[in-house]
Image (cartoon, rainbow, N blue to C red; front, side, top):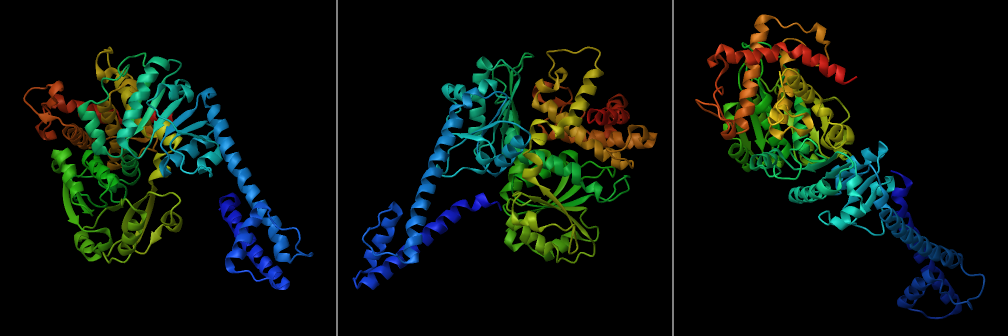
Length: 569
């Protein structure tokens, strides 16, 4: 902790010290003079000393307590007044010059996640304006001390948008805790920039709390009617994102169950995992398993969900009705504080869980469950991936060991991994997906600008971006099934014919899950406008010419890997 973090505690301590010394000094003077004064008189005189109001006809020398207090008390008062004026002037001056900012970031909403992002932007040399209510006029926020400007205002007001020079901002980020406010503000700013912000291509990153709301926005096409959203000369673009959707992708890429237990053949047993949690991250993780948990054993994953609220799984199944077609979902409903370690041991069984994903909304709840898991006797080591929400929290600081009892621990900090410039703005997570899409475009004989799938990445509709993301995120699963990984040299990746057919089957299962979970249904005739498709059937029921698409995707893996590695240099 820095000294300036203790500043007001020290000022308060000195103020209390001055008061006590003053009270003691007056008591001594009055006692020596034989003057009777009650408690309230002493209290009144002690308070007056803060205004340098002390009677001059007291005999010298004064008691040392009073001598010290008559200098310390006014000093505390003057220091406090000067700091308050400086805080006010500093905010007002910075706010006044906000209209002269260029290439800055505008962040709407101030919370732990946005503070982390703002700090990262400032560390990387950026200028940041934060739009939020000012909680303490007398105290600077952490990000203000680091260089950000906090301004109160209404982002739906064009006058205010001109004041913060939104038209010349590099990017705008809406991360308020209220999803509806984020979307409403983003739409209002988009309308303003469509007319006024033609100096550059501006991105409006808009946070939505979970996958289900993302699916609702996509399904209802809420943003399709915005100005310039489909034009090639687009100068502003709303990008909806969910921290938990990004976190679940990162967790799958880093800690997919096949990283702990190899899955290389159809004869391998079913992949089993446990998910503990009832919040947005847990539900995003289950959706991720349904979309991407298609391994070389060609069997459905089994997901055992320990949830505090049964409504979460019900909501999942209502929003993604075919989800049980792609994963076996077992439910255990119990409060976190009553987590039953014996029941966990029974469910683990002889086969065991490949991994346990501890995805609680509260780090305190995660700590309690982690403690119980460490004492279970399953006869095997347990790989536990614990998601931490507070980067400065006690659990994050204390969990420094890789091994904890019978647990092999893997920490994932949601805020550190998702709310950074690298993760959000530089789009590191989507780099491979961009390579997949660019490769697709390069193989087209001619590009039709009216066809959505033929648009460049920045104009690509969300549905097609997600198709590329799922294909990219599953690439590691395919490579590990044949003994490779994304870090391997493309020249070293050799796919035997029998492996190619297995990977093609896996690719079809992944594609089928993506389409079904995106609302597509089986039909005798394809109709894209109604999300009807003829190929939503098992791989072995496909015509050979249709299987060719999956085989081509597999044969293309070394080329995609090479392009991806080149893009990272």
